[in-house]
Structure formats: C-alpha cells, structure tokens
Image (tube, rainbow, N blue to C red; front, side):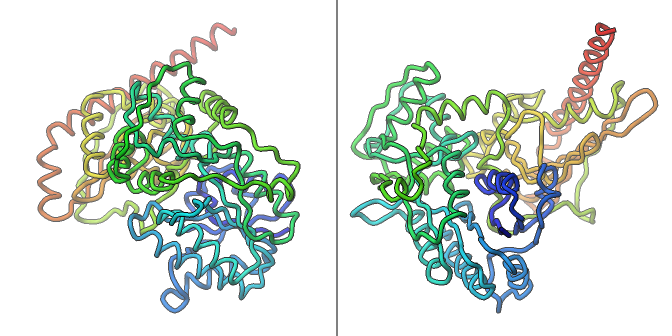
Length: 491
C-alpha cells in the first residue's frame, strides 16, 4: 500500500515507519522540519513532504497544498500527532489540526485513516487532554473512514508514561501520593500498540477499538517497577492533592515538563479501564503482554542503549528557530589543539549530557537545571535517548540538537528559560598530527535583560566554557590513546 505517516519524528511514528517498510509498503511522511529526519536509517526509503497541520487553507494556502500533496494517492494515512506540549490551548490546536487533516484526506479520497487516541473514563467527564483525544477521533470519523485505537499509558523505553513511573519510583523511597493513584488503569506495551497499528492495515475501518493489558492501579505500576528493580518503596495515598500541585511535583522529580505532566496526571484522576472484548475478537493473534513484562523489556532496551525513540524528541507546536549569522549575536569562541583524530574529538563532545553529565562544574550545571525547572523550563532531567548517538531534533538535557554532522560538527540550541536565544557549537577540524576543537557559544540577547544576563554571568560562563573545552580535548586524547593501545595489543 501507499501509506502516509504523520508524526514520523514522534515516539510512536518513529517506530512505526521502519516496520511498515519491512512489510514492503511505500511510505510517505509529512514533517514540519525535514532536517529532523537526518541520520535515521530509513530516511532514504521514504518520500518526505514538508508541511504542517496548523493552518486552514484560507490562512496558509502553502501549508494546505503541501498537505494535499502528502495525501495524494494514499491508501491509508496514520494520524499520530498531538499538541500537548503547546500548553493550555492545546485542545483548540488539536481540533484545528484534525479538521484540516480530515478535510484534506476527504478531498484526496483517502481510503482509511488509522488514529491512536486515548481511553475515556466511564460515567464521568474526561480530562481536557482525553476529551481532546476523543474530539480528534470524532472529527476524523466524520470526514474519512477511520479506525481509532484508544489506549491508556504506553509503556516502553523512552515513553512519557514509563519515564514518569521510572523516575518517581527510582528517586523517592517514600511517596506521599494523591488518592487517585488507587484508580485502575489499563497500560499497554509499545510493541502491542505497534502490532495493532500494523494489523489494522488488513482490516476495513473499524471505528473505535479499546486496547490494553490487564488493568492495575497506578500505585501497583510503581510497586511493580520497584519489584523489577529490586527496590523497596512505600507509597502513602492522601485524600487530597490537587492535579496542578501533583503535576508540579512530577515536573520537579521526573524529566516530564509541567505542560506535559499536567495532562498525564489529569488523565488518571478517574479509572481508565479498557473494554478489550472487541479488540480480542478483531485481533485474536495479539495477546497484550503484562505490564511487568513491558517494564522488564523497557529496562533491557535502556541498558543496551537501544532506545529507538523518546518522548522528548517531539518539538513544541509553535515555530522554532535556527542559528543565523547576523548582527546582534554575541560569540564566545575558543580553539584548542588536540592530539587526537577528529573522530575521537567528535565522539567526546557528542556524548555530553544525559547520565554522563557535562564533564566539569557539575554543581553549576545542576543548579542551572534546577532554576530552569522552577521557571517552567525542561531542566537537565530530560537526559538523552542514547549515550553516544545523536539525531537532529533530539533533546539533550535543556538543549535541542539543531545540527549534527558525524565526525565534524554538533550544534545545540537552548530550550532553557532565557532572555534571548542561545546555542553551543563544537567543530572537529583536521590538523597535522591531530585536530582542533573549535567551541563557540552564541547568544542573541532580547532587550536590556538579555545583555544584563550575558554580561552578568560572563565571568562564570567564561570559566565553565574554558574548562569544558579542555575536558573534551583531554577525553578525546585519552580515548585515542586507549584505542591505539588496543590495536598494539592485537598485533
């Protein structure tokens, strides 16, 4: 089939595309920024259309035409986008995106849409997030034959729900939790979600299908995680804890930002139990794996460094920015000769961040991350998907990978709270007898506060950046020497 995938740079879509290709389908992807696909092993096998779902044809005819072009000749389209990271107005944004997409799919004569939505609570009003998920499904079904899978928390390496459970359980030996952690939910492993999405290609449009594994409470989810890790944890439910307060707590303790933590928390204020009878009848070959098995598999993937996609790979719904060499940008440049090849130098600076840290001034990085979290920024806890591999658009702590060219360049764009825009860039330049490290900090101040911020912190920034460049160089030299020693021993 000819298949369109939206959300191909997201958590689910990024895993679905290669599996569609393995099954021999022709895959087209619609992305806002094609540069974010660079480095993905399947890029050369797909057709890429640049466009977005944010605007109506009358407002942005260029976007509408790109969407029409993306849907032209398509047999099946996967709708795998959301706008939760956009903040409080995300339901309105999601509704507009769905309407734009559905009308374009109708015009193009798309035979079927497959959509991944969320479970709805029974007998009580849903949270804004879950209500928006249901509204998107209704909009799609009104215009195009649709299969809508409704799922609860998705459990897999790098998923937001799994990361929330993981960090809360790892970091807090004793937890005072809201009473609604005793509500039943139906989690589902990412591998089972992908199985349903793939098998739906062989079925006629099915309407709404609820999917999930055996239900358990959110407290039991954390206790099961603790048992798998061999941890002892005490969880004490309290009668009252406001969702906003709980979301702030989740935002401080876990990598999940507040704007994503709040809809996740609100989604479990009431039981979310899937009625899987229809799924069992339609897809008897799928037996969803138990939650404990999903946790064990996720931890195994993390330990092996084989996390395919991560929740933090999603960008904000609004426009991003890129480095442009122009007046008004402050540069702090330093060049360090390195007695190691460019390959070793690149590996050194490409492994910064995440669990491996920033090599120097750990307390200063930690303090900056904490201040950023308190101001509503991502802080340092987002970490990174892989300890050494980077793809454009991925998160690295409070940075975003803007450009990466293996063995040559890495540029990170700041997503921390700042009175301006900032980048940190490293280049590995070949030189006789080794290489040169060129490290550049860029800052584009916004107003007077931007200039005061830069020059007020410049003395400590200067020391940190200098020590960072020297640490990167030392690590590259050490790695090169170790490699040479290994080669000599083999001889």
